[in-house]
Length: 376
Image 1 (cartoon, rainbow, N blue to C red):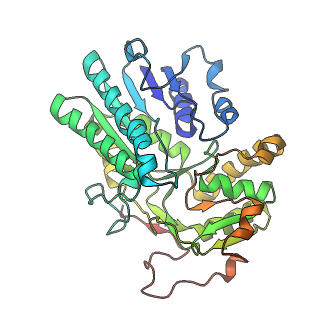
Image 2: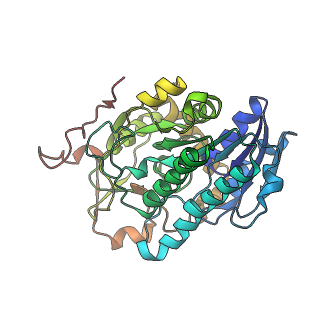
Image 3: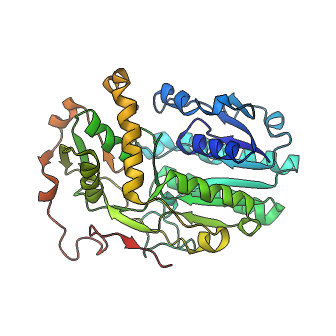
């Protein structure tokens, strides 16, 4: 197959392109090198890809480039590009989110429909479309309640994919990725920040009490599901959760990384609450049934792989660690402040074991350190 991968220099996109090439497919990748984090990291992601004769790379903006030459003869489109979650003002950011997540998706759908030879259009959606789910584990038919520009625009683009399938017969499928981690994870993402804090001996600022839970899924498992979604005829027109089906507390992740690294993390608890969902956990039965998908990588093993990647990244590139690899404004549940900013916050440095557990009624009962298992 000839494949077109957007966001090919990014975290998921670069892994996906490598897997497709290893499977014998031809790949054309495109990336705009948005300035959300250090370009050198994205160039590094492309390093192995550039050695393949069957890989072509285009640097360009998907709102501006001529699509027909790029999509000529393409069988599978994997749309991974988009504006990721940022902590920013709704009004000032929404135009950018709309262009990056909705209008570019619309332009690709129109091109795929017009050219007529596309066999599958795989869209990378997000668990952000759910917001704070009423029930866990959350099923794909649950009412979506997005709480951010990212979630709203991801849901809008996903809806466009479903519309083009129902109305025009375009073979689309949307994959709702939950919290993906692994080597090459963006510098603003939680596990990257955790690992960097250990390697660079920096404090880690934890928003909330650490009992928030997330459904983490390793990058190799995500790539496996994504490739299967392109090949499986039963996936056409579907929306599917791609997750581990379990959730763990952020607090337990820190403790696990301390064991993996053999180091203590200087945790700073920030009392300023963020408008984030407290708990995520996916029902993965649809992906199991339609794709034969089951995640294989255990959390401990995946974290160990990412920690080793981050250790080598920053130990061998001290200038990158010194200047910081991410622009301010990007983050998720855990952010790593500068030394100057710590003193300015209402924050307290604590031993992680001293964080009090929420009382009954104050938080979802799933906020224990034990994983929450989705129905099989």
